[in-house]
Image (cartoon, rainbow, N blue to C red; front, top):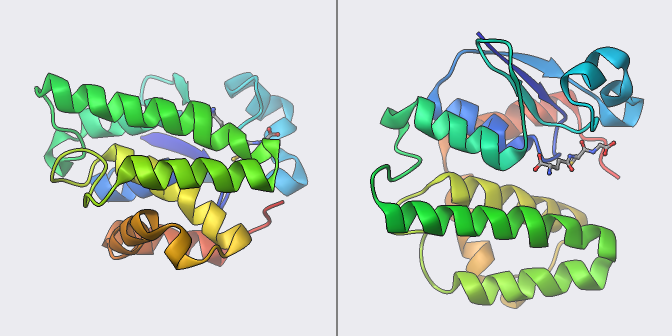
Length: 194
Ligand SMILES: N[C@@H](CCC(=O)N[C@@H](CS)C(=O)NCC(=O)O)C(=O)O
């Protein structure tokens, strides 16, 4: 069975949503960052960087990085339709979005509130008025984007007119049963976010 190390509201929220989307059986391992449970020797042996998420695969390999875990789940459970397999253009666009999210959106928070606001302004324009990040369907790129914007909304409560496209996307993703279930579970554990 898959084993999933996560902390509510953190980066691990995206693969947590995906695990529910695909209906995979997994053992959840709550790893409380505020209690430094990501720094104990057992966890560091799995993920030497001491970050969540980690998904331990059935062969024992500890898969790290949100984008890789999302990709694994989408490919492993193709019937969930989270990745348009076989469509090179669509797959490349998904990698493009996820690279941008991991490399530009995620680190911007550490650069301060104004940098954080600016990257979401740019992302809102880049996203435009489409329904989903790539093509006509909800994919792993939408899950990845949603979790970062969810965190931004939770922390700063930005005005809706400032980020109209991202708020529209946020509202659509929030309606998904797997997203509601993940939020319910994570809320039950409690958020201890900096
Ligand atoms: N590049 C990683 C980033 C993961 C990450 O930054 N996780 C944060 C929580 S959002 C973490 O575990 N921080 C704990 C620490 O650095 O001590 C990914 O995409 O999975």
